[in-house]
Image 1 (spheres, rainbow, N blue to C red):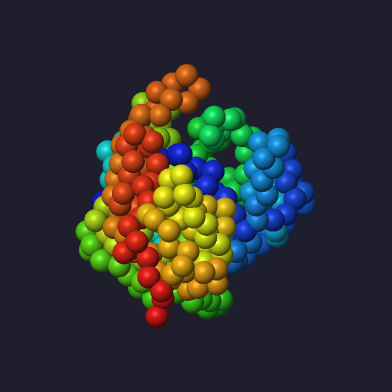
Image 2: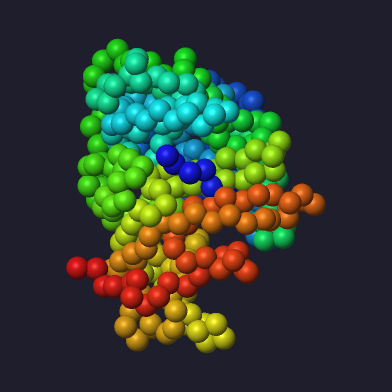
Length: 327
């Protein structure tokens, strides 16, 4: 069962998925057009900007505006029903981009099967909210599915069953698994405890999901495709690496996503250079800690790579053995 883990990564997760368009008011209508896309095309349509001076982040769509409607037309690769007690949902994967899930309320596995051609339909909204990051309150402008967003709690929510339907035609753009690192079998069911293929750093960050429960002050950020004990292999090109002598670590940035970084123990700058293709391998673990935000102590559940500094509440540097030149 996929573990839900936290919203420290909320903004990072959305920024990764973000790849640009006009942002209107939350319920603004800019023409009301309907655009049909595969799930991969929808994700590739995102863009993001960030202003550190005004503490503002914008995630927007190139081809869609608030008030438009998107129809995701794709083939179902996998469906998994999850009953979490207070909420039941079906996690669906699309063939064009199986590394990212969407959730639908309830159990729809009697009505839909893997291989079915379906549509998932939603208006687009622009939602604005504040979110604390690094001791500052950031203003977030986020363009997303209206049917998949909880505007009260500013978090993702399962689509209503009425949003998904069988497609009338099977004429679906066959861009399945166009990601060069995709293996074609990304179901990654819970408990298989194995690596199903290497990810770019961008793909790894894009796999994160988040939920927040204001009633219990619980934040969760989790990996959609992996569980605790699974192995993750990140294969990417080094964009930059720099040695921090005060902490005796090397900071790595990857070409697919330069806004975040990983660290490795010691100085590895003699062995690796920008432009090198490398792999970083680690197991997934779950960590739990308390975080004070806006005067409230939140219970944080976070699914991350092995190695967590409980005192600093940050990822520990990887051992040098975790990184290698890619074949």
